[in-house]
Image (cartoon, rainbow, N blue to C red; front, side, top):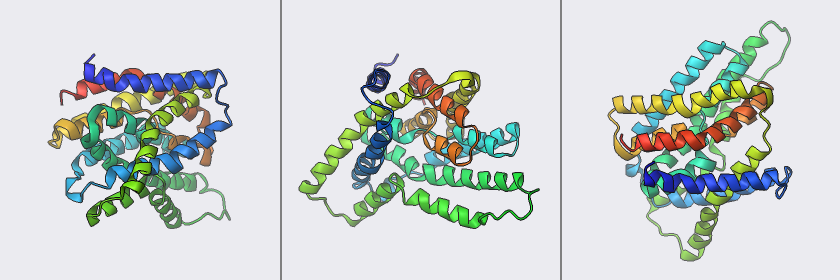
Length: 315
């Protein structure tokens, strides 16, 4: 294995393993997972993202790599619906096939492997990731639910436009996109953050990587796989292998080369993100399969990511 890939992945693997051991041995209880998650997403993530983008100017951003990522995601999403039919279960599984864990694993991994320049590419994706994929999934799911309930008379449901408007608002006013947008706006002013404010923000951001990765391990320790392992393995292979291969092919056709394409390919190879489970809960479908798929995808990523990163280095 390439030494740079190994040096980037090994800390990630060890921190996830440490969290897994902590969860299995009961050092961290299941009830603490929610509090740790809130700490990460409501305090550490905003600090890291705001500071990372507070010195980035708009002309430094490139949307072509992001376009390759979303084009691949759209094709996989549509193919999943064609394969499984137009229903809420298919829509949730299509989201699982395309929604990466770009925050808890992606930020730490890309930061280690590709440095600040790679982080700018990743954060450009993150700023649109939830907005594009979750809003699109909400539209499909609401249409699927309306289709399933079409035979029921007198059922009152919120208008689709109202649901989409709320989804769009929630995707923007969120601990991930909001600090990215705020950081970008601050950068355009040309102001410099006072050290007395910048230092605490920097320390909070530095705490994100290790705590988030340990949290992934703890979550894995409490996630049952059970009888769904076959279906979960299929979902994991689509997400961890098919998605990055398609991004690489489309990116190459669009003329992308080097670091921007490498970061998008690695981002596509990241395991299934936690928002997919929230959608399965909200729409009451495939909850056990999605939970198992997240666990298998994350465990499998320890192998597939190393292979993808090594191959991506040749792009």
